[in-house]
Image: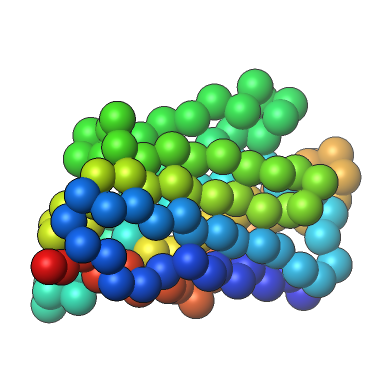
Length: 128
């Protein structure tokens, strides 16, 4: 079984920065796309896909939600089975629980498909 564990959340003032980390452990085969979701604690809010990064085989392409473009940067360390989210110029509306995800292939060739794994989340609060 493979698990994802996030860290790096906390309280920061508007305009500040945080770096989130997510590391996988367990019986890892290999990962495809990895990324970050967030969900605010306002009742009824949907989970938002914040950033994604492709596998090295796919060129490591990144993509971002319009709301974070130019402020957030996603990266990954494949040797350490980790994905990161550097968040700069944080705004109160960035306040949310941030979840990392990873597409975990069930076999080395990817012929058996993959599971989308989700971490337990880390809370980011942006407030003066």
